[in-house]
Length: 332
Ligand SMILES: NC(=O)c1ccc[n+]([C@@H]2O[C@H](COP(=O)([O-])OP(=O)(O)OC[C@H]3O[C@@H](n4cnc5c(N)ncnc54)[C@H](O)[C@@H]3O)[C@@H](O)[C@H]2O)c1
Image 1 (cartoon, helix red, strand yellow):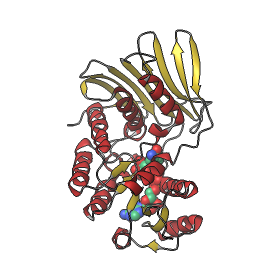
Image 2 (tube, rainbow, N blue to C red):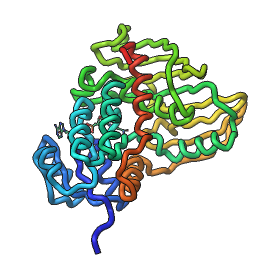
Image 3 (cartoon, rainbow, N blue to C red):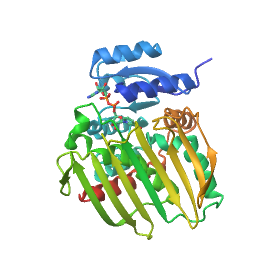
C-alpha cells in the first residue's frame, strides 16, 4: 500500500532544521524524502540520524525530487530566496521564523504563496505550547474578559553563536527579531490583531544606546507599543542578560482584575506553565511536561496531507513583522 504521508524535503539541517526533522519522524507525520544543506558533512550527518538515503547538493536538485513540501531552516537572510524558489515551483513550504527580515520581505512571500495557491507555514513554535493553548482556551471561555495589556518578556542568558545571527543585515535585527517575534506573534494570537499606532523603543548593544534602524544587532530591546485599538504591548527581550538562570520567558495577558500568564519554569527553555491569576492568587491551568518543539511542523504536515492550498493564517506574520519594523524605527 502506498505511504499516505506527505513526502518532505529538508533544506538546511543545522541546529533547528535537524531538530524539526527528527521531531517529524518521531511523530510519524511525514516521509523524509530528501535533504539538502550547503555543508555536505552536515547534510550526511543529519540524513544518517533519520535514515534518509537521498542527500542533494543544493535546492535545485532537491526541487527535482517528487516532493509534497519543503521545510526550510536556512539562515534568515536566505528565507526569501529559498521560499520564493520552492513556492515558485508550486510546492508548499514550511519556513523557520522569521519568515523574512522585514514586513515587506514577508509580504512578498505571502503574496507569492497566495498567487501560486500553495500552503506556506512558519515555525512560530511557541503558539503550539500546551500552556499557550490552555491559556487561549481560558481566554476564549471569557475567564479574564477582554485583555487590554500584554506584558511580554524573553531574556536569554545566552546569545546566538552563529555569525549570521549577529549581523543585522543577515538576521534582520538582534534579540528583538530573534526572540521578540515569538512574543509579538503571541500577542497577535491572543488579541486577534496587532497594528501599532505609537511606539516607544529603547535598543542597546553592550550597554550602548542604538539609534533607529540600527546597523548593529541589539542585545536588549525594550518597547512599549500602543495598538490602534488602544491596547498596549510591553516588550522586553535580550541576549546575554545576567538573568541568574538560562532564560526568563513570560507572556501575560491582563484583563480587568484577572490575567492569563504563560511562563517558563525554573529558567528552562522547554518547560512552560500557564496560570489564571486573580489578585495575589493564581491557579495553574497547565504544567510540564510537554514535548512541543516540533509540533508546528507536525501539524503543518498533517494539514498538508488533506489540503496543499494557500492558508491565509500566514498573513499574520506580516502583521508581526510590521510591528517589529516599527519598533526598530524602520519603514514598515
Ligand atoms: N522556530 C524557532 O523557535 C527557531 C529556533 C531557532 C532557530 N530558528 C530559525 O531557524 C533558522 C536557522 O537557524 P539555526 O540556528 O538552525 O542555524 P544554523 O546556522 O545552525 O543552520 C542553518 C543551516 O543552513 C545551512 N545553509 C546555509 N546556507 C545554505 C544554502 N544556501 N543552502 C542550503 N543550506 C544552507 C547551513 O549549512 C546550516 O546547516 C533561522 O532563521 C532561525 O531564526 C527558529
